[in-house]
Length: 375
Image (cartoon, rainbow, N blue to C red):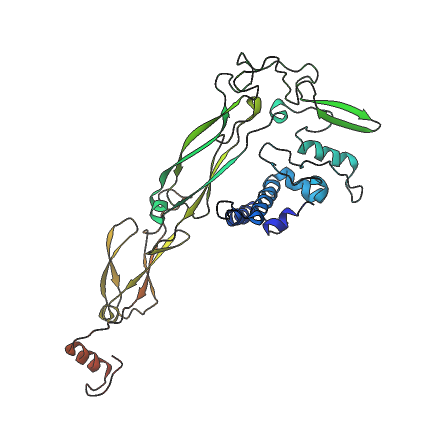
């Protein structure tokens, strides 16, 4: 049984792309197999979340679901959608004769979902082939790393274009000739009454180009499995939950099809001194009572280890925030600009006082020294 992708991700039908990505990121981290070893329930939830995101992240698939509901993905769970798989699952496409959608509209949406384009015109070779899968990784960095930016090295293994055949899967490394049976469209058309149907070409298996002699090393797929290393530049000022995209650095597509993308999710570890709010930073500082009452200066160290003297006005109250302009986080959207640093004023009550200090405080508070004071 198919599940409503909006309900799986916990978002409204009019949710923005940003809301959908945020909900997906939260759930995929919650149910990730690495965090839930040996949990079949978490594994199933993880699959459901990915399947739901595969539908809603793609405007065409989302529109198809919004229009036809579960009928658009009947018989499957959209596994692999957006990753080179069949976006309509493994079952048969079910037609809903109710509502306002005509049969031709439903067929057109179904064919688009299978990569076959509109009626009457075959797809290009790029749409007939299977594009490479997108890949996703996560890195946890310190707030100081987020301030300065850094380069993160990712090591993984995936399918890449096989160099000797240039990704074409042919023995001579050249693009295979156009399939004569389908004329390079990758599909053949048949008619049954008033139905016009498209199906993958049996001669070229939907590639649009027929490989007569396959590459012996990749068996005609045009790809091979390799260990890889990527250097990902994390920009200064990046926020917790941000996602970086490296176009074309995912898995290789089949027979020269485009490669997928590589995504890196950024998690920023909470800092012991600074709290981030947007591009601003907040730090809690204990200020001596005399400085609060009479005014003065305090010394602080910023997140980039600069030492600053900050003026404290006379009569400053505990809980007030002193603003230090331009010493917050870099603004990732406006190069060269920074947020502000706010000092959350606190006070530390001394636990050990000398007799002289006690006397002075008692005099200040107007309490006689021979009476018990709150000090």
